[in-house]
Image 1 (cartoon, rainbow, N blue to C red):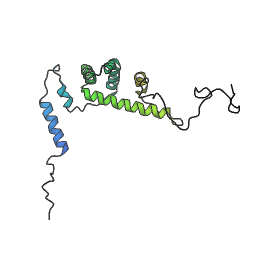
Image 2: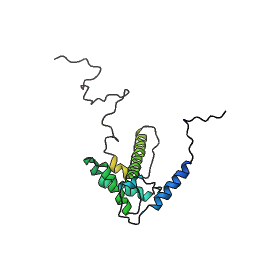
Image 3: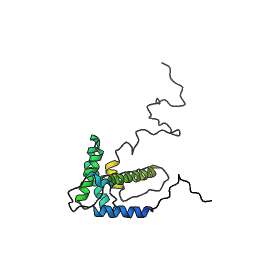
Image 4: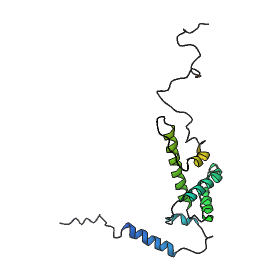
Length: 172
């Protein structure tokens, strides 16, 4: 007895066939007018790899235009960065630039956290110094306070008075 349940649908096309067909459609519909760039390109499949110079350009543009984040215009920031990248012949969408920068920030944070732990070997990364210039002052990189149960108070802590532990408190 075969299991022909009406609720189960078997896919008739493999994922690779669908992707190839989508790529062919996108190639057929491209225009020669490079100035006619719209938000719909964010949905296109772009398989361009992020080479070293493209990543450095992305970081540089992010540093230059990050003031836009304070205004709350994230999409506008990534659209502008994408346009600047396209002027330099790198065809990445705004969302691809955003995703790549997020990945770079995550990796930066992992390395900073790793290097901050005592006993760990120091990790190096080609983009560490460049990103450090931009990100080192961010609150999500260096927390304002660190809680711990194994922290000893220093002699100069504002929570302790400067009396010696062995001396009894003086009466006034």
